[in-house]
Length: 331
Image (cartoon, rainbow, N blue to C red; front, side, top):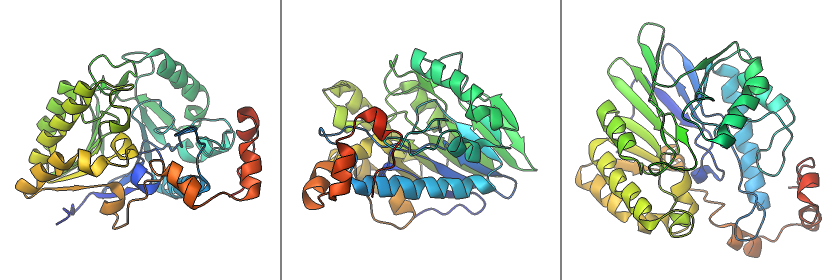
């Protein structure tokens, strides 16, 4: 049975199981309202194809949900500077579904924004994006504060704690580092571990188990990249560490990279079996919300066959990428 926290309310807003690349989640305690990793993206090219119209409909829907949550949120977090985890300030209708400046302004304006340090424990591309965020979307914040390894207290009983930077995937990952976030109210804990990819990194696993959350939302290993961009041994390490997590945490919300593989359920069967042995539960974000999984990227090739786009969309597809970024696709 799904574990329901008494005081901490969490609502996944955008995720692979909701049709897009993201882990954006709204969290509310009696003291404070928090928007975690307010970004959402689509993969510009998968199976040699651009996003299907159904994916654009999903990203539009998720953007609206994020905007609604941003109206309420007092705190916004940035675990790292990939665009499915924060919102850039430029127009892009292919990947990020953003208007120039306005989309980011609506999310960050007047908020306390707690961010990954853009200068330390960061790779080159994210350092550049972090610098740009500070100059653009971050400038709208009421307060922009580095969060690495820090704990912030809100009201009488809510603490938001950030881990030290841990690897984005395997040890010494070229993708850099991310922060994990723990939200605690009285004796309840929810942990948000985006892009740890399993975790593959032993230190990330150690920190998660040390926190002992009642619920963890975690990015699983990128099965679809196994043997291609990611070593098979690293994928297996991520799956083994994930088994340790589901054994120790009552409810694991498993999301992100792992769901980009159409056969993800079969490839993670040991994880589900381990959870079942312990009377624990593993759900996707969609399942946590009581919805069916909408794994659109993994189904992209099939979607183009079963639901051929309209002629207007095909015409849009033929435009060059620079043009398409500034023209909304006809969906």
